Image (cartoon, each protein chain N blue to C red):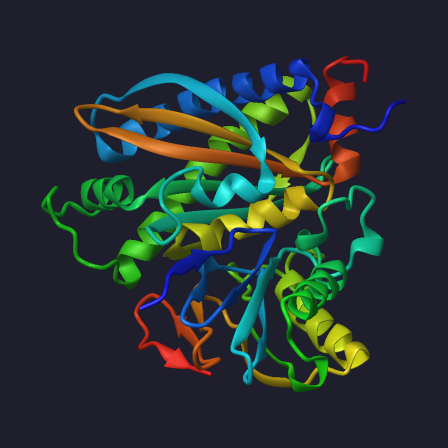
Length: 161
Length: 206
């Protein structure tokens, strides 16, 4: 058994098999993973907001989708991952409260998920699985031995994507 | 006028929030005391300034299930507010209100959730009337929305809201109760312009 490595909010980490990367209780944030199945290196970024260019105070790169995903890619490559083999998965982006969708904060979960799609397309990394939206929190675990992304939620059976 | 940010938070603003916490908890105590028909005490609230990304563990471990009540506010100021409780406090209030055994820990049913919303409504109104009383501003709350889920997932909402303007967040911890003290956490999240409105209405120079 490898170690369970925690990724906090506005945080990103890279790990190798047999370790597992986890984030506890994702809400509207996104837990995006990159994985190289050949050398079994995985990475996870837990970002809060989609776009750093819309925010004045944007020094923390792991806080934003655009800068966070790019930084995670850079770290993956630094750890020997091959860009052409990388695959991505995303989870989170929930709307925790059923507030009116028009408010900027109300649909931030959706915007976070859309940002991942956009940036991954730009980087040419395939998004092979997603479990996003709806109205509940998710605990996620990326197993670097297999690339499986385990998703747990309160009162629901866990699933692997 | 300097731009307001919680990254260089004004101690006056902290005092204002502490006072809102004080008056708000006082109002809530009075309303709840008559609803659940018992005498209620309260303690002086604590105002905590922290990094927004640390909010997920500010109340309890990330995966502990809590109750979050969320309201949008508009009119003179726009933004939102939240009131959060750990499950033992939430069960205590619902049991009192619904006339159930105080030890009952069954999952909330529809009736319990609607009682919880009503409690949320009262508590939110208590804090908002404290804010509008202090500032002389008109503040109109939306209906309350409720979530019962992992603490980190619920707290991602204020973390993101604060995260839009800077790296810091403010959390107000209040305690009230009789033989049993209820721990509640109040979070006020004005939109950027509304910070200025609040401070200006209090005669505070930024």
